[in-house]
Length: 320
Image 1: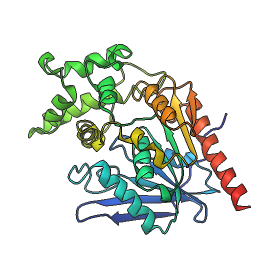
Image 2: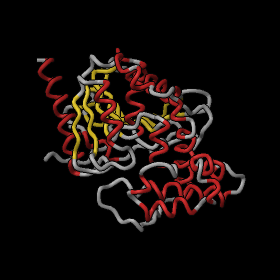
Image 3: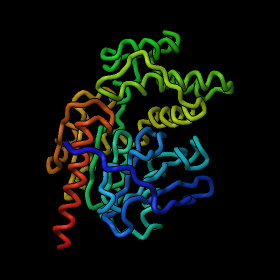
């Protein structure tokens, strides 16, 4: 099985203003003259990490990683104003142009898969291919599956769901995303932080196939609040997409090489979304692997690294 490439450090970092409010943190890793690829992180709001650089051969790729608006080292941290999918898609294109890249491979997992598809469909002439993992299509039924009382995830993780549900009075269980949002948008900081910790306490330890059901995060409360608010902001607006938009517009990218990697036992972004995507995009290769949601589980790493290596091989053969 393939494993992650060794740790690497950026050869160039940028703080790129994209409007009067937002400045993005962007890093470039690998080889300046390599195959351009953009990595789109999950969340929304999670930011990039050093591990994300390691899905690509640094000797062959020019790896561009972007902290999306309000996330990671982008500023203002946690900002929701002018923060929608359309803004993020425009930002990716701004980064590409500012770095002088003509076309690039688009790679995204979880929320990053949503953004990868949205960007590639908006700018198909700027993508050389698309690799997505842990597919999330921004549909209301996907949000209900994981975050609402009529969803299915609560039947799989009852211990953790009990704590998530207990944070809200039962009369608010009919729209839990909105109820959590109201608390995370409260004027009282203790109310905001408690809601954010309960929100991410439900999600954070559900990503791996094997996990400790009673684990509690020790993350910084303000970082937790920022990520949780961005997530709820996007989820309550169904990712600022029209229903079924990413499937409806798939013809715009069907000519591009595509790989879909999906954990068979992914509870956060269940396999039905990856299946639906593959049915709309039969030219893409769908690989179901024995893992959960996390990108770093062995079977998922193997599939993703094989995909990036294969793309590099094809690029080298074409160049030859």
